[in-house]
Length: 390
Image (cartoon, rainbow, N blue to C red; front, side, top):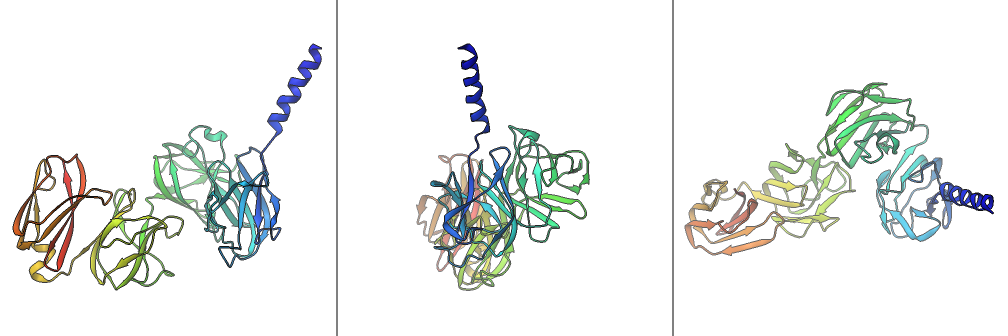
């Protein structure tokens, strides 16, 4: 009886250990070519799933074509995103808009990230505690994306402070590293890279080993510039949170902000010249002019400040002092200030005033410490300025 019980327990745990959840691809452009037939992927850890030499076709209609990943052949749990060749699938997300070709496909069940790398290209990932703070080098890579098998990139990943390697083809004996950060040249078998925590846009050159961990780029594009099908006009940043560009001339039209020149993360809103953009929000309606633009990545808040106002009402004639302040900002203009609006960092209106005078005191005694924005109107002109409460 005791032997039978031990045998049962052993078989039970063996069944639990050997069980892995099935991840498959399904859709009109998937290998099966059908929304009714799954193509199962392979896994060794029940987290990272792969399938090599997969042939997919081109998705043409986002409503009916494309493919998705799903769990255990059941639509109860499925992942999708319109982005290709890499992205982050979300539950019941959009169909993945594939382009025809033969690919090595990787899908991470824990975070929904996926990559389609043309077959024959080396698979390169970032591996280590900076990527997986719990499992460290016992965890999977975060795979990078490539279109030419030479330059590999990773966008939209938040690292923790720790060490990491670049790893080829998930082979622990083929790692590349260096002591340099945020840029350097990795060598095969080199030391681990000491990564500082944060969101980085990572680039790695397979031929030379050159790499960089840079702040994500934020660009603006749209019909108010040169159209939505051209490269972004990038803003500048010194901290990876606030991005600016000065004296950018725009036409009447629409615009959006996006990260790393990808539609994976983009912001829009119907507000102009100041509002809080939301992910996949509407296009921003832009009025022709030359603007200093500020965009905050953490909140989506943006400001377009006209720098070519009429001389008598130009922003150069507006003074706000002291800034920062402990209590009161003094607003001074050469003409009458018709209205003053105070916004928090999320674009929410806190207070509104109609001074009808060229001098005005804005009381900040009841405000918490932080960053605010003030919009001042004088006649047909306006200005938006960032102010700080100590």
